[in-house]
Image (cartoon, rainbow, N blue to C red; front, top):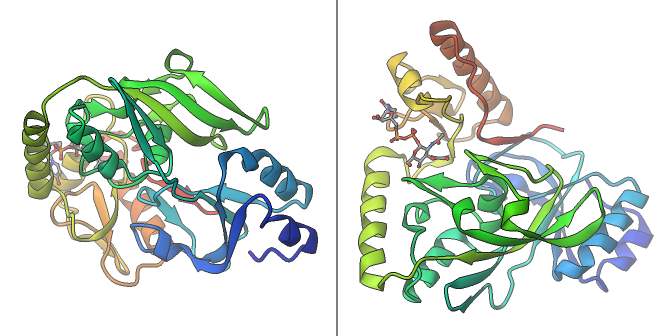
Length: 302
Ligand code: EPU
């Protein structure tokens, strides 16, 4: 979608919001799939209410992207513009056992930075790609660690109230790959409370998780991580594997040979191929196990 309205275009620089035209979402997502649209990079959290009011007034649909690591976007000219926070200058500020982190910060870099300041707890998250904001929104987790356990405050743009608020940790519920944030809330910053540990001790944990991940996940390939959430008490990857579906494909969308809950873009996969693979596998699992797998990947199809 192209923003053509002269009033909107004239208002953006002062906010400040930088507009990039005809950006390919294939380049902004780890799956490497997705069509084109205008990208609006937000330079200052405080300008978000005014920006959204401007877009809403002109009926310009919009979606908010974090790191693009858990996202499947349809192809072609997209019927919405995409908003993204620009990188902040001091994205992590440590104060005792607290880390104040900008939502646009890279999750892995944040974990490493905290580790170097003798703050641990998040070793399991080290290989999880994406931004801190994205991890917060869906309560990212791995190897027994979930980011939600460490959250004390979140600065968020609440779409319904049209304002920026700071929520205390106990006002937010963090569950398995799910939080109580509304879908159009925007994560802006977080205050984490982390246990003190020595850097070498944290590094040991980080290395262990990295090894486990390297041994079981297709790290070098284009994917959105796990496609499905695990059903209660079960494992989506194991079920898909047991059905002999590793290597199963639609076009260039393929079930990974290494981990059956990772679907990879093995070349020039189209979004429809990936969506067809997802629904085909879901149906087979449902038929065999009577379990309806829920997407973990976020799909932007309208
Ligand atoms: N398994 C198979 N075949 C496979 C994949 C897995 O038999 O192809 C078996 C494994 O041998 C193991 C069980 O299934 O016994 C569970 O597998 P794994 O330890 O790889 O964990 P997972 O449940 O598949 C979850 C998260 C991952 C996270 C890992 C490590 C979900 C949906 N996935 O995977 O998170 O990295 O644990 O903690 O919760 C993600 O969220 O995108 C993601 C990759």
